Structures are given as structure tokens and as C-alpha cells.
Length: 187
DNA sequence: TGTCCGATATCCT
DNA sequence: GGATATCGGACAT
Picture 1 (tube, rainbow, N blue to C red):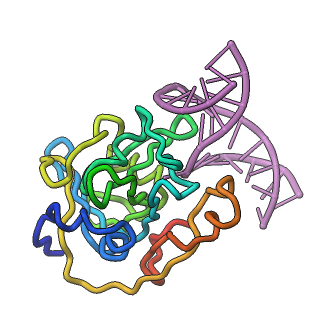
Picture 2 (tube, rainbow, N blue to C red):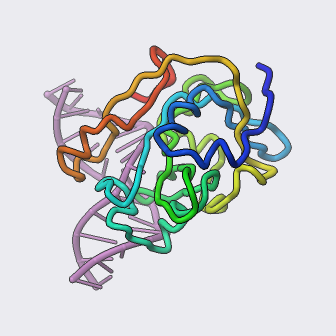
């Protein structure tokens, strides 16, 4: 692989649905103990606006946990579910607008075993991501950032996972984007 | 394919 | 103080 260019603010400040399609195929780089862990993003979900019943920001709610979702595009929103799994999100759009992308799976590129980064909890585990990255700026960080990849990928979309509680409308809306036929997309 | 459940931060009453 | 959560692994069916 040939990582080219670190993605800058203007990549992330576009609307979440635009960034979601564009981010597929991009590289995510984590520097951990002097080693680079690299994955290619193959699956994300969009959580968009205060109207999204599946979003932690539904109704414009702001809490100590979800405030990073409102940061200008390019910041990390990370939180724990079920007491043991971390969920890594990237804020998108302008400051003050609650929208983000949940990274659900990456394809191993460097420093990873086969399929160990498929699934949002597993991705965080192998990329060594936790609360210490809360609010981290991906355009400034020395330990976590994204790089461009000129390769074009074929994109498919479908309903988001695990949000039946949000009711039939929001549970069915196709805001999960993934690379067509890629074996590293979560099952 | 389905169900069970871990282990706890966070939100709400 | 109690309920719940953007999951994943294990094991039965």
C-alpha cells in the first residue's frame, strides 16, 4: 500500500452521508508503542441529526457522554456499551450539529491478523482505542489519523445494526454503508 | 438460527 | 439507586 495524504478538516466537515460514502476505502492509522497499525475502512454507519431516533443526540439532547458528537467534523466520539465494548465514532459536519460515523469494520493492512477488526467492538480492541481518545482531533493527533486512498471502491448500503429500539422507520433507513463483496464487513 | 450473558459507565427517576 | 446499552463469544439447536 502507499498511504498518500492525511485527511484534513475539509474532508470531515461535509454532511455525514457524504463523508460516509467517501470514507470507505480510506486508511486509518494508529501509532501504538512505536508501531503502526493500519486498516482500510470497509463499513460505517451514519448517525445524523437531532431527528435521528437511533442517535444519542436524539431531540437535541446533550450529555457528558455525547457532547463530542457535536464537535466540528474530524473529532473522536467514543463510548462504552454493555460494560465492555468500545464504539468508535468520527464527528462530521459543522460545529454544533450532532452527526457522526460509527466505524464498524476495517480490512487489515498492517499489524493486524485476519478479520480481527470486523465489528465495532473488535475494531476498538485491536486498535487500542478507549476513553483516552474522547474528543481527539484526527487532523492534529500524532497517534490516530486517516489517510487518503485513490482506489475506488464499490459501495452498498443497508439498514443499521442493533437499533430496533428506535422504531421501524429509523431501524430500516439505509444508513449503513459498506464495501461491496468485501469479506471484512461485519456479519 | 437462537438464546444467553458478561461487566460497568452512564442516564434517568 | 435502578435500568439499560450502536456487542461479541459461547454454546445449544
